Length: 176
Image (cartoon, rainbow, N blue to C red):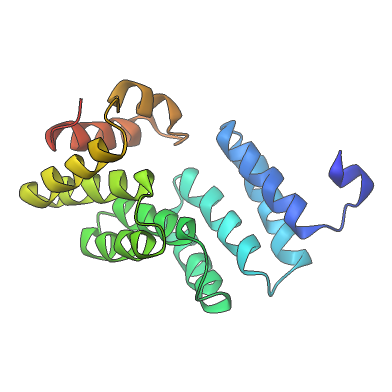
């Protein structure tokens, strides 16, 4: 509806792209994200939204430069920039870089449960079991009723194997 009123709004295109991603309509999400960046090439948020759509569509290598640009444009950006940027590195199995980005997300928002979950999975997949268990305890501190089953339903990744890999890593760290 908002785009029907103003098709030149980069933010609206970017947010529509994100909505498409959560509905697993990745091609549409990327088209909307690209439109948003074309409308606002200097906008940090639109770059980050497009990057997130690419990450969810299993294209993390393409997302990384967009996150880097978003962070250059807004070095004091929100926690989710760094959280989703870290997810790209997890997908590419670059765990050290992922941990660095998750920690940046947590410096901005210390109780961001998604960043703690990401850090738990990164440590677990990296084989750093002690750190993974410690982060799992932070997740449970923030949400004592946390459930892997419920969390798995919320992950909008294109590839089920990716979801399974993350859930298995969280389970290995002690979450149920």
